[in-house]
Length: 394
Image 1 (tube, rainbow, N blue to C red):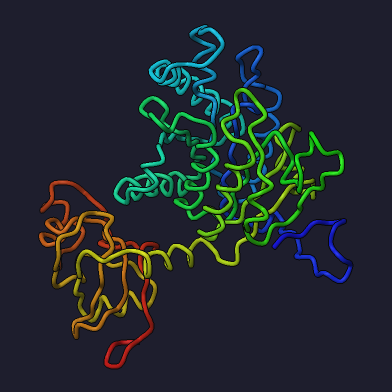
Image 2: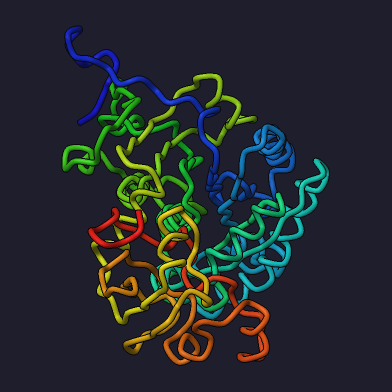
């Protein structure tokens, strides 16, 4: 369902546009065509400075901001003075290796001018799909946000193969937003939103301000990439919207061609919102509870049952039995001492290590495994706990 101001009957109720100030964790995706001056092969310094001022304002208000930034290949080919035109795979990878250093330095410097620390995370789509690597990246993001640093995330084009193609960073940004449990994803684009027809070809094309769900009608409105440096057209942004909204993250497409684009959004500027009825926590827990096949079982004591009911994480000390063959990141069933199922979650240790540290305190875990490891057997964010059952603590 979509809301199109000017094309709906007056009797049709319009959904209220969300306010940027109501979002706590925001992912901002910046494409190459916005960041890099294609003629000079240099960063658009004035534009970037204005964008970072917007980010600093959000950060100063206590919000958590993550950046998904393209541009490593474009910067690398400029520094290496490579000829214009298509690059071979190994040339793209080499250019990315040079450009990633430059891109990280640029973001570090511009954020540092506002007293904001930053950290670079390089990922591929596989890192967001394979659970062990997914949990590692998620933990790194969480720690940077805890330290009030801004994660700057880029696709790892130095090792990417089929990933080096148009559109992946839109989908990658959506997967990062999901991984980080962000409640909003902002795609800054060459265009200020989704139109009901290609605006360059049709002067009567109308902006769709709010999309309540991504339907086949919405998908049919997608266009092609407009810029040499841009990897994705509207089609990949619609794909990103499907990923984000399914995972409980709102998404919007707005113009990045203006200075202070985030402030423009906050001020009610033109854009398209893709809404989700869920939130990141409930969507993630629904995925854990219903979409993953459990690979093992952890039986816990009564004290741990009470702790889980109170919203705590599962610590190794509360585990009394380990069954099954599972790897870190796999889903497992959690049972109480009377064998009733308490919940399900993503385990932080493989079965062999879980067996070694069950019933042990955190200091013992480091001695037994030789590494500090995770303090939780299952973190509460990765745990779905059911309601009290007969005979179990409530």
